[in-house]
Amino acid sequence: MRHSIALGLALLFVASIGWLGHAASLEVQDLSEGHGLGFGLSLTAPFAAPNTFPASGFSSRLWIANLFGFEASVFVVDGAPSFAARSFIKFINTSLVDLYVGTGAAFFGSEGKLVVPLQAMSGIEIRLSEHIAINAELGLLFRGVSGVTAGFSADFYL
Image 1 (tube, rainbow, N blue to C red):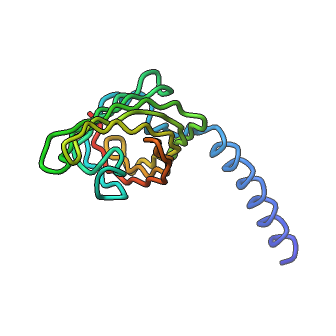
Image 2: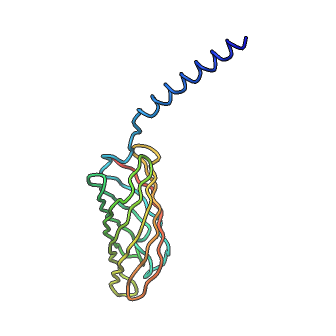
Image 3: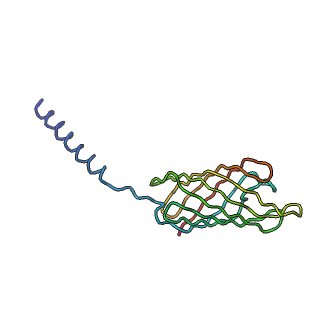
């Protein structure tokens, strides 16, 4: 009886070592690799001009070589069409989560004046699938005075 228990435990140990070696050799799919162009909806805070950046609206993102990103956003501020352009670079790239930093500028009218705030930000992109990602960002806004911005977006990548 004791010999069969010891033999069973030894077989279980050998099988678990083989399974762990096999699991370690499996490659984890990087869901952001090659996902290139995406379209999405953004929600940012603060909501009211002129301290909003880039503002809630439609955006498109393009990742090049899974390292550099560019974004163009279109939104409405005070009833007028406006847009923002930003660029990013990833500093942590894992199979499901990427961390990035970026900068950009927005262009919109407020109270009859052209407002061009600049932004420096950091963000996290979490991929839910090969084609769907959510992003959360925290940044600093500069337009004579500085302020804090935050954003959330959901993007669909082709």
